[in-house]
Length: 483
Ligand code: NAD
Picture 1 (spheres, rainbow, N blue to C red):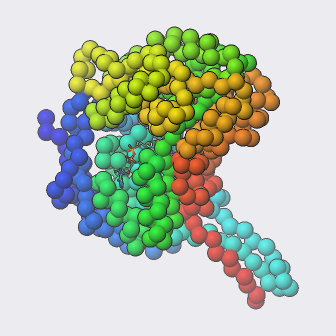
Picture 2 (picture 1 turned 30 degrees about the vertical axis):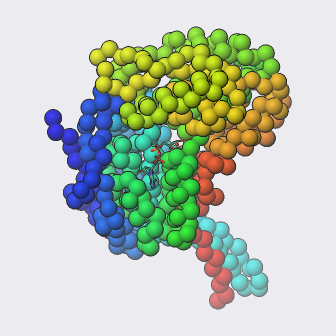
Picture 3 (picture 1 turned 180 degrees about the vertical axis):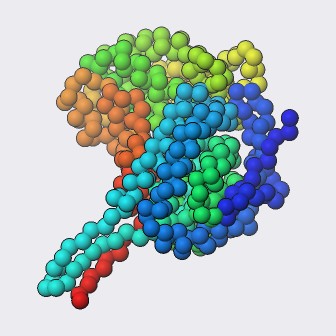
């Protein structure tokens, strides 16, 4: 079977890319090449941006009730095709079908939230700020926005942005990860059916050159990025230097604190799901468990038991709970991190390397891996691994545990497991991560709340979705009138 070469969607039409270079997309469960992503250059990205810029004046003037109608239709189409989309996500990303279904559901919820634009985009008004003078603040769209997405949530991440951007009257260019282009191909097929005017939503494929063209393009007013921290920082600095607003969501090293008073069965189940769900390729995955006081023995024994029950395999198969990693290269990188952990003196309690999956010999599988005795000076204790690897640390008190988290440069999400309201309060008050969970393994993004990390996990000020999306995608103008 020949691998399909992906097309761009510009000005309301599918177009072939003339890019000479392509990225070979693989099915991570088999290693088979399933697609070729064209690595589009500046000219094709420019065509997508210009298409969005042409569509902007009319779209901006379209009454807001009319602007959200295609979003309602898109929501209905996504519901109809949710199972098909989940299957595409699993095929190109590797996560299990239930995980893929969950991510599609979260994406659809973004569209639902964006349909609240007529209320959420409202400004403020006050009469008689001086005698006979009224004042109002209105929110206005800005023009062309762009998003640059990572590989780990191929369907959902672009939906964190484009529904809100276009509901506010902006037009949009999406660049998915070159590693997972098929999910957005399906989403754009549905966008086509939903009846957005040509050019309002554009899709362009590529890698580094496409990104650099978008973040420097004079017609792009704002950029939403999700990916690793080094690239997030590059995007933030470059786009800001080119006068754009930017929200750049980066990598993670998520701390989980377990107090001795925690409900251990529930805690272990939550941590196992958090660390190994989506093969650990989740920016909210538990990465370090800090066992406080005498919680350590029970946590370790519970995790070893729970990890023994994890079923590694092809994510399309019933009962599989840990799918493959995204690529052979990423699997190698995670294995190198494990080797470094061993070299640095951490105790490798469970080693997922060398796992075999019958019938899927070409897949990029790695079994669940557990380290104990990890210290914050080890690379395994500080660097993002983005794989099914969990590390245990120990602390005497909650303050010591918080100090360990505080010394970590990344701060996306963090959780505490406790039955004490006082400990929960100390944690939520002190923790720097901007997604904080209390007895929750994955403090997941909710469409109606803002989302983004802190410290080295986020570059920018206005976070994604929720009410903050309406701040990011609009500018506020104050009008003072006397008649
Ligand atoms: P990545 O940074 O390698 O790639 C992200 C995007 O940037 C892709 O579209 C890619 O084409 C582009 N890109 C890659 N290198 C580039 C470069 N040098 N210059 C310009 N553009 C470049 O990230 P990834 O491997 O696709 O995704 C995994 C990372 O994303 C992890 O670090 C994870 O924590 C992070 N992530 C964060 C969140 C969050 O909400 N904070 C959510 C999902 C993923």
